[in-house]
Image 1 (cartoon, helix red, strand yellow):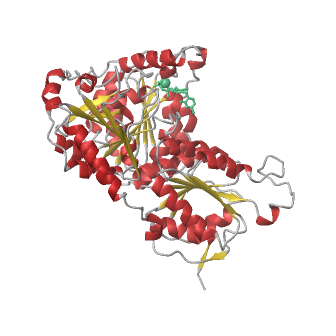
Image 2 (spheres, protein in one colour):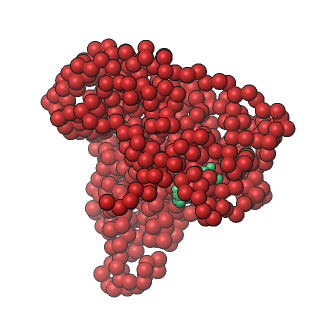
Image 3 (cartoon, helix red, strand yellow):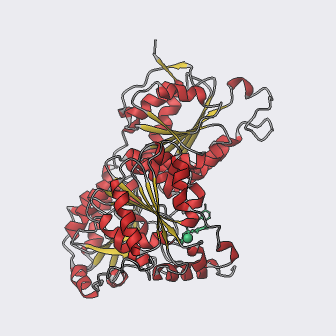
Length: 560
Ligand code: TPU
Ligand code: MG
């Protein structure tokens, strides 16, 4: 006789793969399920303020710990969480959305149920979830549950994509089989040996015929678990390595072959020039969209480009699938000849950036001064979250010491993502110092989750840029809709602290106030510190202005 039920089975499977927390918003359809999760001593339950934030918290947790879990109630909860699940899909992060669901006796009886649209249709959630996940299942039988649960976890891990499980509320505690060894759900099929050999040989021939290749690192490199192998190939070739914005920190910036961010006209100094000068570009997990190509103005393509992705390699007349990127890269590293011409050339292109002079203490705070003060806070133990907005472009300018990580949500681009995601990440990686850079407009979407950072005593430092509006939107296309209601952002922390919190909210309007606030933040280990940095509305990066112009042109192409 098994001691497990559907809920405890799912909880134990999650623990087996290394999950230590799950993010929840309770509702009557999931309460019995939450009780089952609570029985597992190795799985902590973490409350969130709403389901959108719950989904993003699980997404951030997946960034830190490999897989995240959000447990919500039927429909009213799950529909909100699905926005974050779409984000996890776009960003290649395995997040399991678990939703409580109606009692099995109500599925075919025509009963009308609460938290539904008031029709007899109880299939719409599953149908919607299918579009936003790699797999979606409805569990209405305890006997079938172990197989369905294993399928969901295995698929999410293999695809590095989110998945959806709904569990009928009267099945959550129904007895079922015990979980078997974890290897059944984590083992991946190996690369196809013959295809791997063929791909490596063709790619080696391609590269050995070139004189000046460069490597371009893209955001899917992490999902492919191939960061180490990318370094192996880079060192075998000895060539320049550029990183796309969404992949910042996926190749060490202190590596001698690192040449900066490749982002069309707003690349780091010399980076675009060296990619253009090269005679072949090896793209590893690269994602080319309108934003990353600066409105389709910078996209390596044609017969000199090799695209290697998570499970496939494509270039000049070849297409190989069924091979893991990490295997391809480490085998290729052993077959290529040294090709370091781009390093010598890059030395000529590189312009030395001038150190920024510190502002006087009483000088009005500026964006440049903010970056100057944030820069030294980034150490090997830091993870920086850069929110959609000018924080993207400011974040790009931070120089990361080896070990520092950089998180960005550039494909989905949901403003407000970074607050709940940083919250989830902090629980998944308690040893890291988290710094969040976010604009005022973005913050207004998900501000409540700072209260959960306070509740969990997480010493996250939030630099909230109060530039009085949606500046990124101003640069793409301005109108009265880009003005927002000002808030007392620093004052909010007092509200969230209530009687027992240790969050700090500080206002910085001058360089000196910012320096003092940072000292307070570094001292405060018992909760988050939000520093509201007030700067001029038009104090934006030149990069945002150029990029915004190019994106506006791409958006405005007439219909053909
Ligand atoms: O620094 P700054 O002013 O550029 O950033 P802030 O203040 O956070 O403004 C962001 C403005 C923005 C919007 C309104 N960026 N993108 N959007 C469009 C948008 C709307 N809704 C969602 C969920 N995501 C979006 N990206
Ligand atoms: Mg703003």
